[in-house]
Each structure stands twice: as C-alpha cells, then as structure tokens.
Image (cartoon, rainbow, N blue to C red):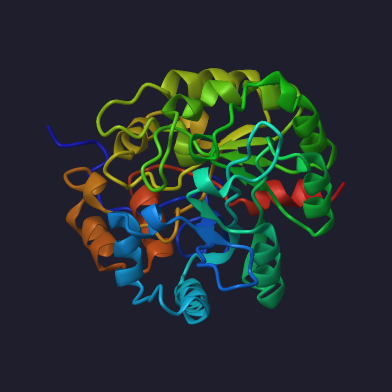
Amino acid sequence: MMDQAMIDSEPRFTNGASRDTARKSLIDCHVHLAALPDGDNGCFISPKLLRSPLFRFILWKHELSPSHPRDTNQKYLEHLLVELRASRYVQKVVLLGMDGFYDQTGLLNRQHTDFLVSNDYVFKTVCAYPDMFLAGPSINPQREDAIDEVHRCADAKAVLIKVLPNAQHFDPADPKYIPFYRALAQRKLPFLSHVGYEFSLIGKDQSLGDPERLRLALDQGVTVIAAHACSYGLMLYEKFLPTFQKLARSYPHFYADISALTQPHRMKMLLLLRHQPELQSRLFFGTDYPLSVFHMAAWGRVGPGTLWRMIRTKNRFDRQVEVCAGLGLEFRSFGELLAPLTSH
C-alpha cells in the first residue's frame, strides 16, 4: 500500500509556515567548527583520528590539506560561509566547539583526547562573522574550572554549551556535576548533549549517550537539547523513543534537535517521529554539518515531484529542510528558544 505521505506537498514547519514564507528564517543549532592546530588556536587532533576514514573523507570532500593547517582552517570556514549564504532557509548557525578529556584531577589529558576545538577559537570565529555565526562552546564538566568557564562563556555571549559524553568520558548523571548544571541554569545556557552511539569520534563508553542520563541536568532547571532527536544510532534498531516521550512529558524545558536524522544509522528515528506530532514541537532544526544529508528516507514515502526537489537540492542546509519537512516532520528554529532566554 502506498504510504499516506506519498504526495507532492509543500514542507511545513511547526509554526505553520510554508517553504516560501519561511525563507531564510532558520537558525541551525548543530554545526561543527572543525579546525586543525595551527600554533595559536588552542585546537588539537590526535594522529589516530587524523588517519581515520571519516576525517580523511571530510578533508578530501572539502579539498583540505593537513599539511597547511592555517590555510585549511580558513578554507573550511569559507566553504561553510558560501553554503550558508546560498541557503534559502537558514540565516545563521551555532558553531560548536569540542572540549577534550579531563582526568580525575580536572586537568586536560591529550593522550585520551581525540579532537579539541577550543572555546577561544569558537568565539574568535563568531566575532569575525557575527551576522552568520552564534557561539556554541563546549565544556566538559569534569574540568577543574568548569563552572568558571560557564560564566566566562555566558559573558562572551554563548548561546548554548555542547558536550559529547561518549568521547569526553564523563557521565552526565553523576551527582558531582550538579553545581555545573546549576551554573548553566543560572546563566540560562541551554545544554546540547550528544545522544546515542558516536561514530565520528572515538567513543569509549557508548552507554553515556543514553538520554535518560540527562535527567539530572533537567532536575537542576537546565534547558536540555538532546542531539539527533534522541536516536540510538544503530541502523534499524531504535530504543530511545519511549525515553524521548517520557522526558518530554516530564520536563517542558526538554528539547531535541534533528541533526543527522537523514544519516542511514539514525533514519529510523526520523521515520518514527513523523507519527509523533506531540514530540515535533520539541524539535529544533540542525544539520550536523559538515556531514552529508541523505534523501533515502523519502524513497517511496513522498511523491516524485517532492523527491526530485530533494535530489536536486545540493545545499546541505536546504536539503535537511526539504527531506525532513517533506516527510511531514515539523520542527522549530533555535531562534524561538534563544529569544526568551536572552530577554531576561
């Protein structure tokens, strides 16, 4: 039987706007600021990650050379700016940093850190392009100065704090991080946390991606955004939908983003959420740039005209809109959350 959604229709967003009326109105809350260490930017990448297939693919796709880090970092930014400026729907993006691994004394351990994009580099980049970028620094709560860094980032106009527990080796449910969460709540900084398996970086304990572990932050009053719409990230096996539903019912300040949902290993959650209208008002737009955006989830589920529009859309920001909204998944712009937080 033909899927009920197999029609040619205009994608619509949660606020009811069509593609035409929603042009250039979205803020993407999940864009990675990738950078090689160039001597003074505070960034780091391990030799193991530099040799990994995914990182080598990204370097190849963007025509980047690890032998010339400063030029490579500028070229990455230029590619991002070109694609963002060409987008029909996205006006700004939140650039995400990536903190490292910290030992039990709270000090950075480079031996166990695969990738570090410093907060200073995030703020420097945002300051250079304030009309295009917003700052999403990363703070591992295990670091000895985590609370001081929260206040520093808030003072520097950060719009959220990003973490990836699987790769940063910390348990979001550990009670010792309560003062950190209370600082986030005090400064009204949303907490964007990776959810599910981690493949891009070298995750050690994949159980740390369980969204149930975010409950502690929510109990301290933190606005939490679960990345990747709470998807588990193991192809057709999806176990976190009930957790998403429970957290959404219990906490009005719990949200998720739709980043990477068109990736094959997270596509199952995209298809499930199409039939969960009560959760769609909790979804914020995100891409997980520079990762690719696929349209295979739409095959057999939309009409030929809609599918062709997705296929011919090469801009990754716009394809994420076309695929997700074209499948009937509604979502919001991060700007809708940002406005009330910054008005207090």
